[in-house]
Image (tube, rainbow, N blue to C red; front, side, top):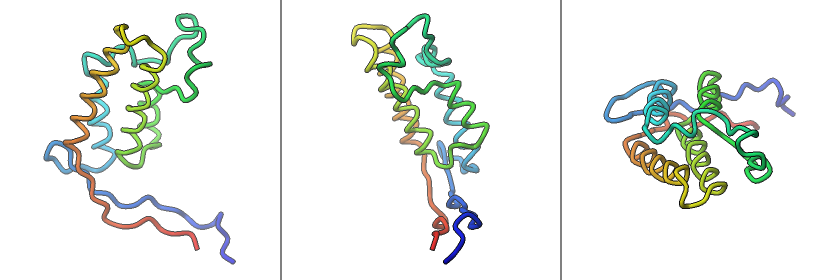
Length: 136
């Protein structure tokens, strides 16, 4: 039997193209993130929700995520694929709409920002160059 703890898993080799420019995956992720974080509707998402402003937020939202957390995750290379970053961006918008009324400015920002993210995601192309190593 093979010692699983000594087997080094490596992420798949990916080729990423964003807006027609081929880039290393981490550069592609940072570029996408920076565009989203700089969007005019990203202001409510820059930092984690404050308990003093929304005391029940963390009782309602079980998987909170914000742009500062994603920035930290980018710096630590937590995201291996664009899909992982996109999943957090979409979750952030979903959380906002779950917590806030559909007549609030926050709901509107989340909806516009998510549409912006979807448009940027459509400009992203990822090709897997190799399969990840299997544990056997």
